[in-house]
Structures are given as structure tokens and as C-alpha cells.
Length: 262
Image: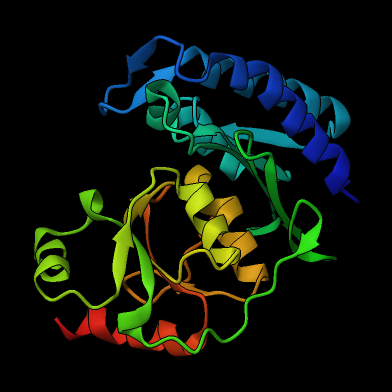
């Protein structure tokens, strides 16, 4: 089965322009049981994309962040290609007026990601990848090469909130990189790494709909990643994953060695 990347991209872009941008920084927020933010825009985006994707590809099924855990588990266990959707990654940023959020969509087939799209509607930047064409940004190739940077020269995206207190403390008392950022959209973080805008990444715990598309785009661009336990980041299960990444092999080796030495 062929999945038309341009058609799927246009569906996402059109939905985001209608359901997200008009309400950016101007929408009521609610809170889930875990304390994370949810808005009506999340629900509307998921409903629109689910309807359009399943109409176009009726043999597929959709796993959305805004579903119950039971629904999500049944979908992942089904013997069908699965669209893995985060309709609004960075909801807190979106609701607060911070222009860093995205729509993330991956296609999982036989236990592997085969297509990924992450769209940033504020910058109108669409990151995409599939098996045939590798990674792109607005149709232009993304290909990482050796940065020639030492660890202490690199810019890192670090999510401190989900790290152990021991590791978080070591990162601020024995700083291994040049500077650190934390932006608030996991999917977009992976894509900025793929574009070479930052060089290192560390996240203690993200869900499959957060990372599936972005991590695939980063990998197809030539980046290196693993969990903190040195396992592949992606798994087609509802198991939150840690992530360590770098834009080239030398930086990845230096970064993982530093993290392991403690």
C-alpha cells in the first residue's frame, strides 16, 4: 500500500490552519488527571484528522493521545496499520501564547514506523520522512553530517522535569555542554535536531504519540539515539520511553559516555 505523503501533509496543514491557529493563545484550558493541559483544539484536531485519514485509507486505524488507555491498547494490538497521532504537541505552549507547538503523525506498520510528519503551523514548517525519500523540511532534504563539535561546544535540548534528581543535579553542577534549552514540544524537538538547530537531546519520559514521528524523522536524517538504557527509542507499546540523542556519532558517543559515568 502506498501512502501519499503530500496528500497527508496537506490534510494536516489545512486542519491546523483552521482548528489551531485561530485559537492560538485564545482558548480555555482544562486539565487531565495527570495534571497536563488539554484544550478543545486537541479534541477538534483529533476528530478532523481521524475522519479524513480513515476515509482516505479505510484499512488503517488511528491511535490518538486523547483516547482512553484501554482504547489505545486495543488499537496497538490490532493487526492493522496504525496512525499514531498527537493532535497538539505542546498544548501548554499553545494555550499560553508560546509559539512552539506542533501536530505529530506517524504510521506504524508491523511494529515499525514507516512514515512521519510533524507540522509547525506558526512557522509553516513541515518535517516529513518515509522509506522512499528520507527526511525533508518543506520538501527540502534534511541530511545530518559530522558537526565537528566537541561535547562542550554543543547546544542541548534537555527536559529536566522527567529526569532523576541525581542526573538533573549533575547536569547543572557539572555542565557538559555549551548551553541548554527546553522548548515544550517533544515532536518538534526531534525535528529541530534533524535540522541541526541543536546538537544534543535528553528526555526522561515521553509517550509513543509524542516521539514516534519526530524520532523517525531524526533517524532518517542520519541522527543517533537510544534510551538511557541503551535500547532503541521506539517501541510499539504504551510504554513511556527515555531518549538520548545527538546529531552525529562522535557527539552521541561522548554524550552517552558522560551520562553513564555517573
